[in-house]
Image (tube, rainbow, N blue to C red; front, side):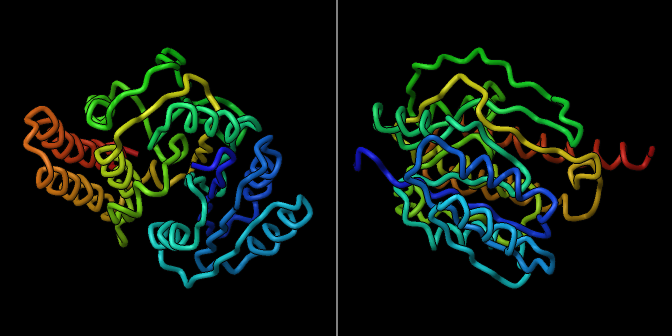
Length: 276
């Protein structure tokens, strides 16, 4: 492994001109400089691409801008993977942001412990700068565990890993042909994450908040539509995928529980929206 490995930061964008500036500023201001930023614009008709280009050129950051017809975030992330060159891959949405020491801190531990995957703390933040859900920093910083153990903890909700707080060794993704499932609008990120963790030999944690998940009040996660059923499909695909690779009863039972929980979440969200 290169002692100063390249990190690919993949950012899918769709009509992001109002938010992309802060996101790219935090990326461009990283203390760790061996990064490439891959912007994948999903058919925006606003100034997302021009703003991105101006920021990254002025900051002298290595970057690529890929423009695709409107095909969804999964296609955008898959295109980002295909066009990446880094030893490590990090997915960041166009309205989220990270601390300036994030990539440096992550790479040091990835290299030191020869990890396949690392995750760290994050907070939810709203458009007014208020924390809407705060991550509790109580996990063991020094812990390195197997992918199986991390998978069980994630399925048990003992740890919280999402797109914004996980970095992958690129080989884990490519060797196992892991992709974001296209035409899936809910749960596609967890499907990708759980498959990747399953294949990891060593997973590490940094017990520190370094990322911020921007959640707008009109976010799709607060509304109900039939696309929510694609989350159930994602849960079923995860169960089928991992069941074909292991007979571990604990993992299989937890995956079955995940399917049941997804059904309950769809129902509760529907009832909640009906009452509004």
